[in-house]
Length: 63
Image (cartoon, rainbow, N blue to C red; front, top):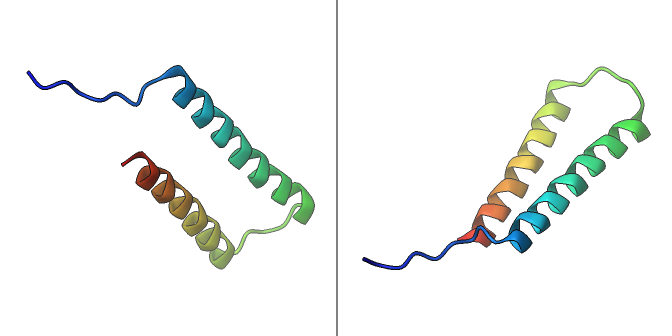
């Protein structure tokens, strides 16, 4: 059998957790700064594209 390389190390999971918490903090701080407002379709699409780009960059880093 072929040996498989695992990326499931404790360090990896720790870095992943910290990265997710930082991204959530950025999102929450930007909401707090802007205040309560009605989110437009353009704004929702922009934020969605930003987070998809971040996730694609992370996937690219993995592979």
